[in-house]
Image (cartoon, rainbow, N blue to C red; front, side, top):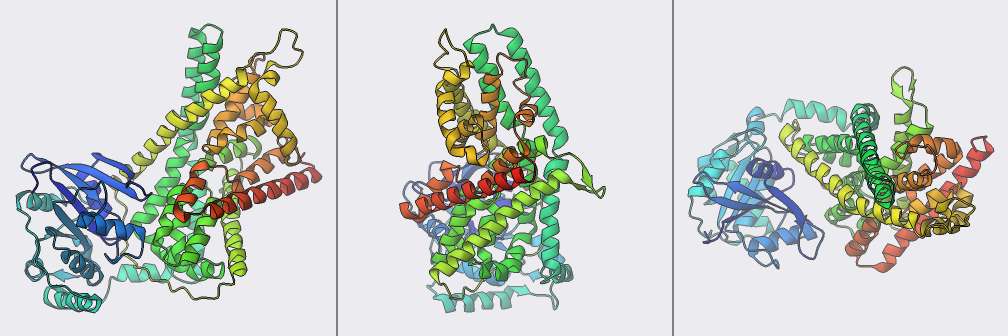
Length: 615
């Protein structure tokens, strides 16, 4: 190994348990960034070897082949060969293969072996293989491969101890492997299976029974709808006690700060700008974590590829493919990684269509806006003693985004006259229970990302908006509210003329601008605007929901909800579309059609709601 800190790299097919093994080996000693020059996620962590040394561990993007069909696979290959700029060549490659799917994964291990780099094979998910009756002669497999093969169980404590011990004691030597073409790789994988693996006569009965229901053309769709519906119900029902606690804490903090600071700009900045602005967004952290809990659990369980398979026919009719499902589902968390995930879609037309409709998926940044308006204007009651009305409205908003995405994709397909067939090839992994360790790490990462946004961009926007709302001060002979004379007040009144047909007042109009930095900034901006405007009143700076309930009509609230289904109000998303498509034309097309949809849909919603007496 090199004299410096040794560097190991995990490489393997998707669904081999590579990420779980990475979490097992590094725990919380890891950092997430992007590779230089691209938006592919880069995970690196530290692990302590049994001999006391510390090593760096890199989790390479999942790959099916080192003959790249996607950017992820190209990066994995180049890092392994030491060709990627700024990435030192690993001292040792740890090729992770699933013991439950060796026929496919051994082919990839043979391809990695041909790189000639020092290598160890981690035979992962051995517990699942044993439950399925798969018998593996590890000694024979190691002998035939010519590299150490170490059984691991990444989801159990201590399940990677043997791997750690082996990579610490071994002196890696380059592997001398004969070159094989694609047919040769498959033939060699079959030979290894014949020598070292004995498969049971029947596959796992549990997997078979579950697939009989979950992949059923009718019941599978019903189950998927129930899963998604339950997820949105839980976002409201489970989070409320935690949200109430955070809200009470922020109100207490605002009162304490106000009581100990003298009247003046500093007190207004801290109470009305920082605490009211950031606190109004921080309260939604529990809901975001609950949403991610479901997404991570579905991913870990092996259900997501099956949902993609189930929806392939429907999505193909709409101009997409089953491969679009996972990027679009990822966009429920954030459109940025969802758009990045489209690199797994090989057909360029399907990939572009998925990129253009990904912003229509309801990302977690919209959740604070939806929750604020739903809680303020939709009654908190149940239907049939079971279904929460507020949860039903939230589900309807998500459904509207999904249906709109399918409609837009269908129109793009008609416009480009695409009649080609796009075959979907997916690996369906064995079902497994999500591990608390991986869920905890995933939720912690998401919480840190959210808190960094609150402490970074949202805080900066709150301070900037507070400045625009307070300066310049009203003249001595002013007859109107002081806020009308501020920069923000003047801008807001101009914009209000543009958005008046949608029912938006000047406060909403001004809050839309900083909301372009991040959608959830809309809530903090409204809190700051109303807090500053209420300085001469007895209204609380933290009572945002009651204030908008008093001052807005139901038609305005519904119009704003619909606006956020479509509005391209996220600069990061547009920047990612530009990076992924390398086209300003496609970026402007996305921004233009989303803004047009948002304006027209909000206009129709407001006018219809007014006509029905909600104005």
